[in-house]
Length: 388
View 1 (cartoon, rainbow, N blue to C red):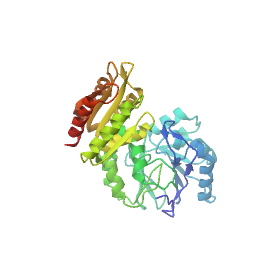
View 2: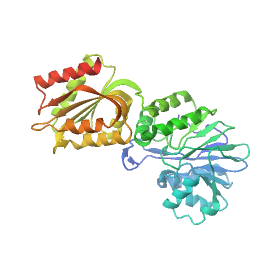
View 3: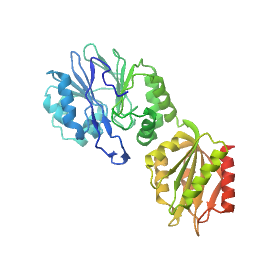
View 4: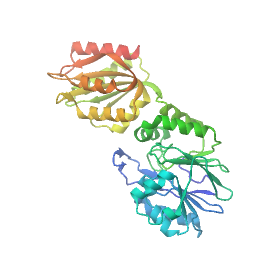
């Protein structure tokens, strides 16, 4: 999937950033990030988005090599977020006759990010369904607001059946990262796009009416095979349906006793034939991975210590992420720990009750400091309820 030689006329000019540690200053990216950009060579030359400022020189070098001395006639701005728009002003300076194609919101937001003096005179505003001819290639524009910013649009090129999908169908990692697409695409989707499932569903309906041979996102590999697989996963994810049957245990433990109980529960669930049991110590593991697994499986167990009359902060952080990403349509169980006045369960339940389409699995288990025969029996009762 890392191959970028997919067309004679649509040329990849993006760049990998292998040194980046946190994408959007919050998501761990151990394999870096790809900033994708493309140039369409026709009677008119059109660049599809630019790239992040961290890779500006590499991106301009790739563009120069692709152009072979030609000039750029159009720049299509599908997404204004700076990791794709950082080089617009420099590109406009390099090609004074180039027009910038976007929608009304595109230009409003560009003016907020950058001081581009002649942007208004060089802007071409497009609306839903409008087309731009480059010669043999014709671009058709689709407005896709809130996937995942309000100005986002996507573009279809009919002659090569190419769908430029902006941030949709992207993933973490550079193009030469050898890994299963779904793992990092899932983490990327739920943490960045996940709140906007209804809007993604609208995009999928538009895409269903198109004859698509390749999906060209702004991050991650170009998708040229088995497109039904990727479209199917996006349909599952954006419908808030569980992808797999299984149980995710998210545990926030202070001194290790809650974690020991979580490991015991995992053992009980596996002994009862649970399809899959995944356990994360969210005090140390990546929170974005926890969000991913919470959405991936159909059952969730939230286990946390009490803290300052509330809940241990790593658990509250996860709950806030789930709330903000519209967590729904799952079965959820709660296990709290407290040495003198257990309070974690009350706080967790307060969040869970505000999630939509949630079934709370009883019993809510209370541990007093460490697991004992009484609380272990309650844990076994919960394991039965989760697997029946």
